[in-house]
Length: 282
Length: 249
Image 1 (cartoon, each protein chain N blue to C red):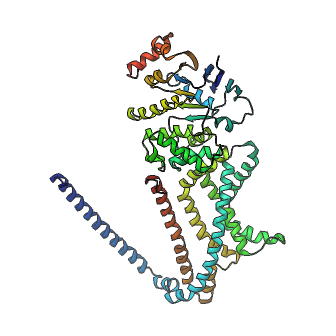
Image 2: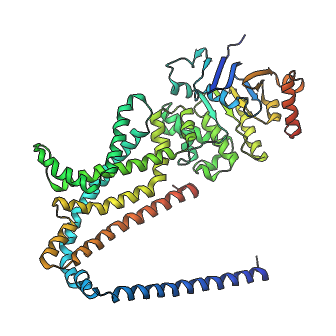
Image 3: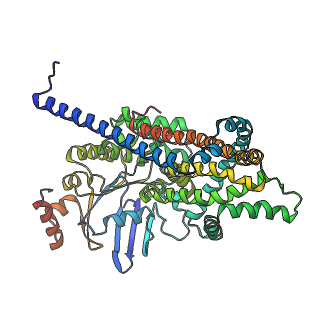
């Protein structure tokens, strides 16, 4: 086959190439100009040198890194535990809220009050109430470790958010899907498990992962209870040296921590799309 | 007199103040195909949704194998598992492959093992020319293929009765032909069917009995010859005339 593009098509392609070259050039010029202005504003600021010295000191950063990184391990442990329980609890609450059986009315009521309450309460307040209030009760079998109580507070708050996301997913599945399943004789719970939830979870994966990313960074808030996590470790360093660079180190580590989860979300979404589009390879 | 597989007696259904079905009574003989015709809004879909208990009825009685399935406290799941239903909009499960779609109910509801459910599904697919689609996801299939899978999914549970609600309305003529030949073959197998359709040519060929619904009532019923060749009521004549003018008769 010796297909030769027509004269007209070649002109069209040339025009497209010219347009695309011009776009690239404009983007480049605009970025340079933008960067130049920002640099000028920041470095030209009166306190620039001072801020640079107290927040961006390479030596202090290197010094702080080991203890901050060690603190981050605690954050990791906390957030893995919290993510697990948040997903489980969130799913249960979402199922409870979307149930229709009259027997489950009290469960629905409790679930509704729960989500209203914990979506409204500031996380910091929940942390303080749980972290300081519960040990105050002096119930012997409840651990009073800051890490455990901090994790509980995170789970309480984030389960409410995740439950709402999953509920939206469940309600977003076309009612005809439920109907088709019931018409085949599947029971309510079989329909939920095999037809509704798989589609709901797929649809809400991006917003769900978004909440988990948010949970990851908020795991740093348990430091207010005295747990030596990355932020607390940075604070200790800062208290010794009066330089704030360790906080920036902690911040950078938190950002690095969230990137894998974000990429994982992208990958998962792509894979699911491919799975439905490709020739049934999975 | 043969025993009816399904009997509807004095069925009544309204949505709010809108009376959709009014004193509908129909008998369905075993191994027969009953075609329900009527204009949009005449109550065809509601009637079918009442028959597989997706709608609660307001009065009357539905008997399946002489058992009152409209009685209070009846196990809805158990009844529905004996009635296969196919809808205009296919309603295949998009997250499951074709085989998984077909085997879901046999495995979960009828306790068939995965292996035998799989074998049955692949046999049915092969029989209806869909063998190579077995492991694909539904949205890769054409509309006609999807609807044929939906019908296979409904018969894979070996129901006593198959209900087909305007199953060709969303398809173009070539795809319609694929679906109709599948239905005709199921009829030859002896499946009892209730079909609502706008395909009058097909209705003539396959029906043992034709029901003309008009304003929620059984306005006329009879054999295809009686209904299509010598309609009695003015309403049926008008309906058939309109179909004729639209080139569908």
